[in-house]
Structures are given as C-alpha cells and as structure tokens.
Figure: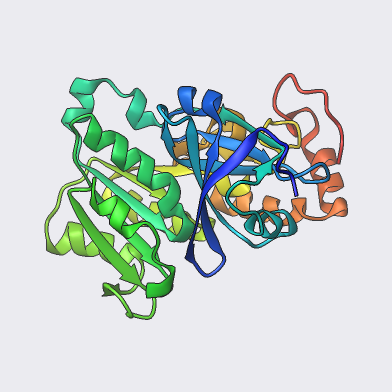
Amino acid sequence: MSENYEYTIVKKLKLADAIYLMDIKAPRVAANCYPGQFIILIVDEKGERIPLTICDYDRAEGTVTIVFQALGKSTKLLAEYDVGEAVRDFTGPLGQVSELVKMPSEELKKKKVLFVAGGVGAAPVYPQIKWMKENGYEADCIIGARNKELVILEDEIRKYAKNVYITTDDGTYGMKGNVNDAIKYLVNEKKNIYDIIVAIGPMIMMKYVCILTKELEIRTIVSMNPIMVDGTGMCGACRLTVGDEVKFACVDGPEFDGHLVNFDEAMKRLSMYKTVEGRSKLREKEGDTHHHKGCECHNS
C-alpha cells in the first residue's frame, strides 16, 4: 500500500459494522484544528477526495482522529489499511470552526445546550462536547442509532456530557424510538429547557429534528457535511440554500442555522449530482452560482 507517505495511521479500531476509527499522524492539522472543522483525505495515487469531519485531535502527539463508514470504493479501501501504513494526502483544517467555540464565554455560559447525534454523527458531536467540558461548559447529548450494535462513541461522550440519552429504532438499547422522541421526552416530560440544539447525522434526521425544534422554538445548528464531495467549493456539490442566500457547506459551513436550511432542495440536488446528466442540468440551471464565488472551475 502506501507506507512511504507522510500521514501514518497510528491507531485503528472497528467501532461497529463497517464503521472505523483511525488516528492519523498529521502534526500541522492537529496544531491548528478546532471542533466543527473537517479534513480531506486521499488514500492513494488514484484515490478520490474524501471529506471527513474531525472527530478528535491531540496537539502534543500530532494526531487527528477520523471516523468513517466504509460504503464507497475509497472508504472501503481505507478500511483495509492498518496501523503503520499511510495515506497519500490529509489536508486541513477546512471549513469554519463550530459556532459554540467562537461564541463569547459569558454568552455561552448562559446557554443550555443539547447535542443530537445520529449514527456516525456521533463522531463530529464528540469533539464539541469534549471542548465544552474542558472549557467549563456543560451539555446534554442524545445518541440515536438503528440498533445497539450501531451506537458508537458512547463511552467517550459520557466522559464529557452532563447527561447522555440513547435511542434505538428497534429498542435493543436505551429508549425505543428515534432522536425526536427523546427530544420530546426531555422538553415536554422532563421539562428541560434548551437554548441551542446541535444536530448532526443523516440529512433526513436533521430535517425532522429541525421541524420539531422549530415548533419548540429552540434554535438549532446542523452540519451539512453529508453533502460535501470536493471540499473546496469547486465541484458545486454542496451548494445549498440557507434562508435567502446561496451557501456552500465546505466553505461557508459545514454548520448552519437548521431552521433556514432548505433540506428538501439539498437532498434532491445531491441525488441529481450523482449522475453526469444531473450535474449538467444543475450547472445549466444554476449558472454562475453553481460553484463557490470566485471559482472558475467548470469540470463535471
């Protein structure tokens, strides 16, 4: 494989079926990254760009932790790599720092925060909860998955969250139901008051969380990492509408006000982008707004 490359894998764990954690030696990224940001990884000379949210980092050791699901060709190839081997490129940090990290301390101290992690979304939720605890803030967390075997990073999140609530679709662990059922329970039955909810997971999950939290009048932040492809704004894949503005998840985000995101448009657009014909139609329809402003790339 690629043991002569710079970015060496120093730790590898299988968290669940087809879900892996890796610590990769990347001192420059580790020295500069913060929760909310992401990296672009290329496995080998023929590999495609894989955007992955940063799960954790150790500045002293110079390592960055990533979590990924082996679904496509590139992620399946990455899953075959072992400790001691290395990937070709590991670029970052990219994207904007989490809004909570940038919030003034006195303001954040007054906020009651709830994180909602769906599936692999537990990975980008973890560094934010860890950062909050290490900086003197508290937060609750809901972790949702289809079944017990797919609940990941529970022990790690419990170290830093004030309270952790688990939901599984089949009821094999924690509360039977989805993350919205848990939000309703906490707000309506336990009478918990939250000022901000940070929801990260599959697009459909974030959409329905935002529908509920809009009804509950709780400000909600979402991460649009799932729609990113290139990670630079050049491909146009992660173009989305936020309120009345055109944004790009990889450059302007990945975090946005969930109540302003047009999820239906973003999901339909992502489906179209997967085909050559679809990309052509999107370029024709969107014109100069197809790519991030200032980009002159017109590749398909």
